[in-house]
Length: 272
Image (cartoon, rainbow, N blue to C red; front, top):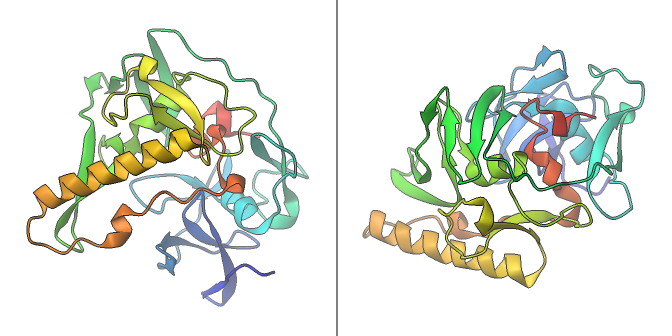
């Protein structure tokens, strides 16, 4: 295999881009991926949907998704993909038991006022206006967090809410609720675009699906990076901020589809 491998606890591991972890072929060794470096092996846990790990922010990463992403070739056709188990056993996360198939579930934009969304094992009420409530409390949308390792404020192009230890991009919650216009089904790498290039405007009317490689999304991404850099200059005066913080998101066509928004939270969209 031509992909770069890392030895973790004596096991060859490959990187799952979408899950941000290094994982062995049998799924029994998993470590977080931090800009290409591997952290310590994570404890593997199991629930009714199979084995998983929690690498950061309380995010539940399905090991089968990570293994299939890292070790198996994608379905060759166009459009969204889904991971399936050859033997139907969700506890068997070995690459040989997993395969990618075309996901033909149709997408229909949600026009309702409010939609419940299950994400990372928690329940949220997501509103068409872009408002998010957790346990009845409206969540404040944040565009940065304090990075303890560098003692700097880091700004992000996907603002988030932070209930407890979770950090969840509002774009992802709006996508999971179906509040993004357009049809991502035939796209290789659909991404959420804010029509007015205001990253804090999450009103459903302002959100649309855009192909990652298309000029519309690339222009939006570059504007968001410029905005984050400007905010960082103000918040971190006279300090050296890592340039890697302003790199564009890496999303080759084979690593993302719009249904990825549900596959780690136990929601129906991510289950095979």
